[in-house]
Image 1 (cartoon, rainbow, N blue to C red):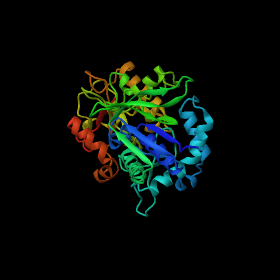
Image 2 (image 1 turned 180 degrees about the vertical axis):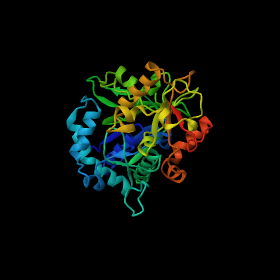
Image 3 (image 1 turned 30 degrees about the vertical axis):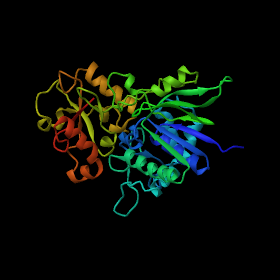
Image 4 (image 1 turned 30 degrees about the horizontal axis):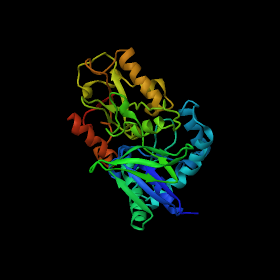
Length: 362
């Protein structure tokens, strides 16, 4: 049998991980990416990656409880066998990423530090500051480039996927793509084509996703006869930084490290947030969900923030919908160590230091 060749379309975490594992199996891989792989949207993943760990096991945690939290947080809509498989493999995947050089935050004793994320009562989340996606991506990129130098992987960065090549029997035989620099259009023969092209958030008017996340690859494949499922599952993140041009993500890690969501009990209270007494602050997530507090599942947090602003008329500002996300009670040193990246983004685009004043998010 001739040596197999696979075309992987997409250079984010999924595409790089698939390329690395295929190359380990001895399969030749062509990796195609619309942008340089280090500019893939995966770099914008900020908060962390979840798995059961030795610390949570001592508190009664298990892979099954991780599975249960995941299914419950998804309103029981998931196909459960792969969810169980994911939670079973998660500790080993994080161990692998650790060995590949991802600089996860450490405790003073040298163990991986963990933070709590929404929808769970355990600190399962391993993280690398507020740039976890970037660090994961860079580690996988190094592994793929090692395979590239060994001749197992060919990399095509700056190529736009135009659609699959389909034979008369309906089998995919490769893909057509265009070089965005030279405008060359050529075919890429392959025994299999794997699409790892990310989300399609830009179909909405305002999104936290990269301007490259248009869903064009999925659209072109569907038009060629590929089946497309579960397109309705697009996440509405509860905390984004409002902007005139687009939205920017404020990671869940801000709440995982102790951030508190609140609004003044008096509608459109004009006082500075620091001068509003605790009794005049409405910590609505903590009051309505005392078990989880500010770390309820994301869909619940999103609905509650929308409800408080729109239906109850308690938005912080009259001209736009927003609530406070308050980190000012946490020490500056701890914030810089664990959340420095995302706080600098907020300060850059809003002109306010979130270490001193609560952030406005929606």
